Image 1 (tube, rainbow, N blue to C red):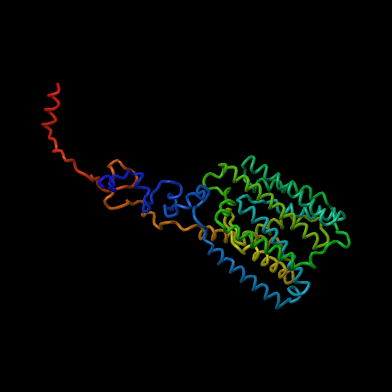
Image 2: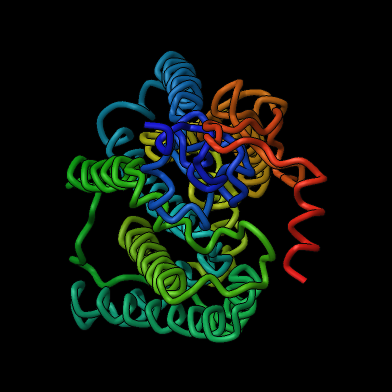
Length: 411
């Protein structure tokens, strides 16, 4: 019928067509049209709608796997004892410790709440565990974990309550933990007969590997990934992101502190002693380096599948190789190199990991529903085309003289 003609649709109705790509909202303004309509309801205000592309992560993880293979082959060729027998079991525990540190940093980075107190918390947990190991492994480990939770809760309280950057709050808390560490001036040794994790190295490493892989798989699910990245700013970073974002930030900081404590306790059990030297900066650097090297974005939200596992193994192999061939190389240099390469990975992930836009060219954002779409001369939303009527009146057209006579006849 005539009144169902497309020319009579209002501007709002025309905009609702599937071919329209110029809706002025935060989604289409960034190049995402109504073809992604299901993504509009997936909290688009907290990042680009759509699924992040994982291809860049898979390519990067293949490079990490290649690095693991090369370093492992060189070690097997030149120092076979380092990757066989007891050497292999010790290497597994070292990779597990580095992996827990990387998981700790990766969790906080994914939530866009970087925790720079990882190193101090790990070292303080090792000292506390060694100091109270006579109470039993489980009891002292649980107390060290409670200590780490208290530090994480303090960081979360300041970060969420004042809505300040987590890196600054965690760095301040880490300095306070370092003051406690510096009160210890003697080497602490574990009692004889204490548990030695090297004998169960395979289980420890398998547990870490499962944790890293499951975490990566969960982080690839769009709702989980978007929830983890709610704190990541999309506008003014000083704006509060809401209660859900605050909850995620608190959980990430608490979990990060617990994983750091686990790494510290496992270090104390492996070495059987804890030196009074302050190595918290080295531990923090290795944690951040492992997370970034594994493909976790320094901006938050994005991360890979197997990157943390491969990065931990690669770092463990590199440290073992340099300890054998170049014992004078500091682990600070290794951490700095890992962070540098990890920052390159962050740039690649952000450049090639964001969702595909609906249309490639900016010039295609505005177009009409059909070549004959009607718009008014006052439209300022990119519409073009002359306004045409879809029906004609059966009455004769009135002239100017008729209208003049009607006006005077009524007086």
